[in-house]
Length: 188
Ligand code: ADP
Image: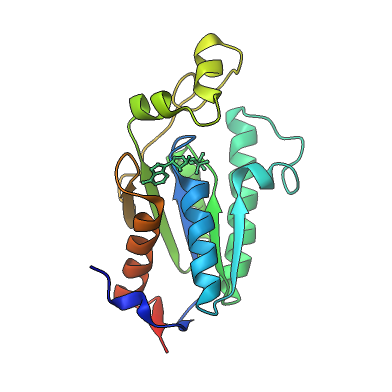
């Protein structure tokens, strides 16, 4: 049971980045939306860099080759690091499939919390919320992470949330509890 997050207001002791990684449909955006809302309700400054949204602005024109994916992630990492350096909480929700680039953006940060949204591929294909897996299997979408493009699981993420069970709300609570327990956040 959660008793820690009943306070109405919270303070962040430092700026930090919550860096989601995980396959398409694993729940990165869903949990990010919930976290953003909750953290703002607690009075905190939050910015979200969502993979799909970033690709229409910051990374417009980039494709899905390794090089373009890496560029996209480096840009997101750079912006997130600027924000968190200025005491903002940034949340990123891009697939970020490559371990070396995730580690590179980790190095740009003082406070980097990698969150692995973990869900078996089979479950994601059954859910197929956006119909993308079907298209990837049929070859209509090329270079699709997990099907025809690599995904490298994090080896030591600060947090792993299983998204083949539980609710997105529960997972968001788990993350907030981690932040309280590890002194990133405090109730005021
Ligand atoms: P991503 O951003 O990783 O591509 P989305 O957040 O767009 O994924 O989609 C995840 C889907 O999985 C949503 O439809 C969400 O409701 C569903 N879902 C079911 N259980 C969970 C859970 N425990 N955590 C997160 N998402 C879940």
